[in-house]
Length: 212
Image (cartoon, rainbow, N blue to C red; front, top):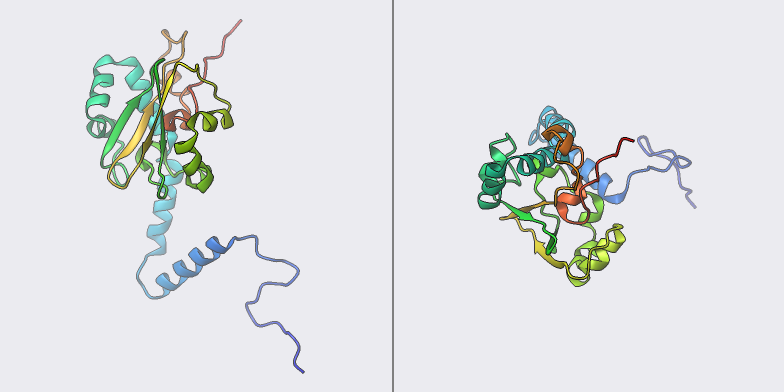
């Protein structure tokens, strides 16, 4: 009778991999495609670096801060978000067709992708895990006010909620309401008040810190 034995390259049995099944599959596929010469590892590194350092919610925060500060830009953003966002240097894959949704005291917008995880990469970076989860995708449609409660947000009952389904063709950026007491702040200061969640619609912009 044979007994189990280790092979060269097997992970130590007392040190199980910390990677999940999907991570292992992605790494295996990447290794295979690299060995066959279909992808360049250096190019992958440059893509990863781009999304780590150049793309992310800070880009969207600059868009929102500009809209809060400049009425002409605000109107342009609502009329042609793709062009207005590109004018600040944020464009490219997953941001070719953008629509801006303005929150008001009467209307609060929330974005979801019910089929997968379509997301405006140039302004928000890569989507958070919860955005891709089935529970969020289902509950955002069935109970958006409950989703807001999950995120610690309670809106007046009179505020109407509208949920927008992002697709491969159209991506959305929520323009949150500008917090009160920020009339004297610069664009850079305003941008620090804009959160990723507020640009998805699951959160609100931060209130400015009050200095005694």
